[in-house]
Image (cartoon, rainbow, N blue to C red; front, side):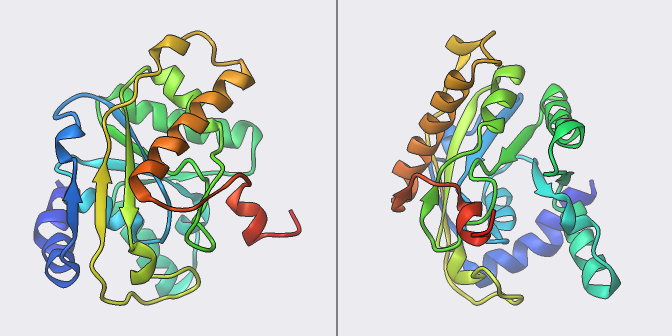
Length: 225
């Protein structure tokens, strides 16, 4: 109920009036039942505009740092993340990451829509980067439709490193559902996981028109890693 109020009575009308988002391919989103939305990641506000134009509640896997900030700013970010239906994901690896992914699987088990950014982090320069295979493992475990999505120009609203948005029209493009059921039972095959992830990135790239770079985005944002 709180999510519905925020979307339809508080944040939604304001964002729609100011940014006038456009959308294509909305008919590709299943009206009911679980689904995984895979989306490119240009800006912090991607998680605002995507659920704004799609008429289904979404849960997002967001890095846990967003939920641990202190002071007024930390409270505001935590409040926004919670109201937008975002779930904290621990990227430290091991059991912590596994627990985060299990939280995503629980969302799907409840018949809801889970949105994931396969690149793992925001693009540092507007290009599309190599996908992380964790998304493929989740998709095979859940056995649900996969909807490729591209956000357009959200990086012009809130570029990486900025704290306040700029007014610019943005778009959301939904592609046709992808079916990976042919790979069921092959969750432990790293070559299969890579093939699924690469296909997802390819479909997202067709929708977004971004230049593609076959390296992880995190290597550019953190050259030492």
